[in-house]
Length: 383
Image (spheres, helix red, strand yellow):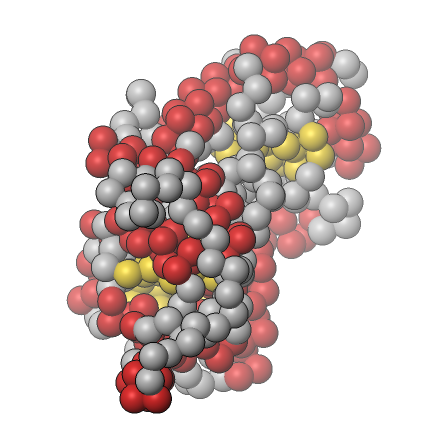
């Protein structure tokens, strides 16, 4: 399927409608604080700091510009940017949960998110994970104390998709807040808020920034929920995005539509090559699912495949033979990367998550797809 990107989103990414005094590039307000014209204005600002610029731990014009852009792209009322994707995850959890609450995690999700939930157990917040994605199975896993449904779609490592609308409706009927990590699809290829999700989380380090030079996170949702997150988490946790990093993120958003189309096309080409290769047991990409739910209008360049070997040495040799795919964590930049969740001694942990021991994850970058396929071919052809 061809990638479908809304025309309005393209204009938002390019900065149409931004007021920068004629400057084509938004300025960087590298200031920690903002003087007030009177003591009364300061007092009024402190009473509603989420709406006023007093101190850059709360609001900064450069950060505000990229927040407004991300809110428009996700069709949300408000957005808050933070210093990393995990700062965004932490802010959501700390603003919503109290001792006695239960979180249900659906799908394979980002490892540090699960680790944070494990740490919250000692504060009285419990969680469970279900890898059964059918709405009936999810409903059966809910508890009376469930306050939060945490979703990834497509999910981490295996990129399985969930029926976002059905799960959101299920949660809403029980008064449960839904949060979806939309880092894989970006707002261009999936808009969870329009399907009933309450909050969207991004690791903006990935595709939104797109150049592997900024670490950032974002949360998008209703104005009321974001105001609560601002006061209960962001101001107190202090994980704020710096003005310069916000400027880098805004710069990355300008090319997001062009980059995502290329990631979509190249990722599909690589996935289809791998699916036809005799040494590959299975490819994990939403386009290759038998019946992927219809919330995606395109695909990013992140995919994985099962090399089918039982040997750590064989897996390591394959990865080390690659030349165009650099070995490294993270994803979503212009360069192609390769990684395996197999660390040589964590087979039991992988099995618990339903992840094959010979899984290889690829982040397909902006290099010519023929070059990347040739690199994979030479690495697969050697014994």
